[in-house]
Length: 434
Ligand code: GDP
Ligand code: IMO
Ligand code: MG
Image 1 (spheres, protein in one colour):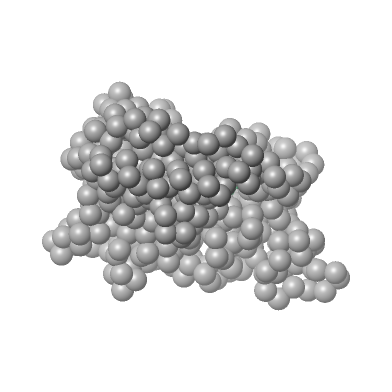
Image 2 (image 1 turned 120 degrees about the vertical axis):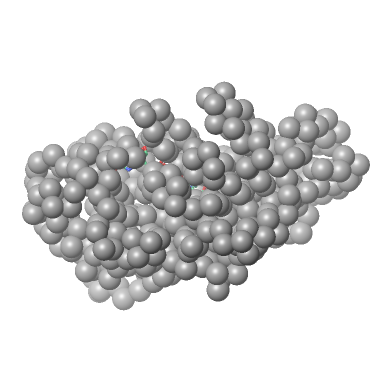
């Protein structure tokens, strides 16, 4: 069976959770490979809404093994909360949720540092999720991070926390005028969660490779989206990890040669949470309408999402960077009421056409979108499950996107529920997972 990577093709919240849940039953393992509890992946099953932050969205299927790979940064408290919430509704994770011993730990001071740094940025705030994600990745790259494996040895953990806190107290606290951090207080607070997690922390790369040797297949669940990738996104208005498909390999220890395909999750319009360039943003009643109809409020932070027209340039770029084999277009139903739809097919910067995405966020923010206007369908697509039942104008909208992006559409999502989905017969995705 194949190993498939699911990625967000825009700025996150494309509906990855729904599609991962849908596809999971065809796989043996679902693995998160980057990000942390900044993610909010919504899955609706039998009218019950689950929002996953750290635990892979495949967990609802009882036979699936869930992996939190080495590339993820883990807040142990957030993880325990999520595990307890799942167990409370009868979803057991014992013996099937494994966290890499190489995954880095988010410490309480990471959140404090993030607040202070965001504050110091003034008007140039990134608008992060305040989960301590960036500072935890900074410590990882700075080679002073604490890893999940360190939690398993209390003496080692105490020493590592002391070392880490000493660094913060010597350098960061004076610089930011913050009181010294108490290492022992942090250590004592971690003890109960460590016991709770002990059986779940393993060498997940070894575990995955053992399973692969027995013929298992993996679904990699990306978090965030291409334009939030620390290398390929709208830097510095990005998250701190590689949300693109390459991250799947780095973040789990599964070699690139074992990845068989990439599915790009693409919202039928565009949204973004937090600051940063967004050329097709609609600061008008049309944008507000998308927000209301699409219920565009952050699954993690509740913040209203910025909304705008579909940006073909962004998704074509995502196809290139990720090697998207098949697309799942989500939230088509949200466009049902609009008489006309714009698709961005290029940008003008200072009056001249832009050939590639500007590297500078300021220049990108000043790009003017060039639109192709297509007629809307102004009829209800909510809940449709057959492609043939879509209105012609909706089919044309989808075809325009597929042609422009140069990637095939394999799934069209017409509502948040599992069954509100059109699988395109004979599509690339069907071939991939046949
Ligand atoms: P993720 O972060 O990519 O998993 O996406 P989120 O869960 O943050 O946001 C997607 C939102 O859209 C969730 O509230 C989903 O329940 C919802 N959703 C997913 N697909 C559809 C769809 O086709 N139509 C509608 N109306 N809502 C959808
Ligand atoms: P899912 O997986 C949308 C955004 C934040 C901010 C930037 C940096 O649900 O698609 P961070 O806390 O990561 O340092 O914030 O990234 N961001 C997301 N936006 N969906 C997400 O995840 C996001 N995770 C982070 O809003 O702009
Ligand atoms: Mg989300």
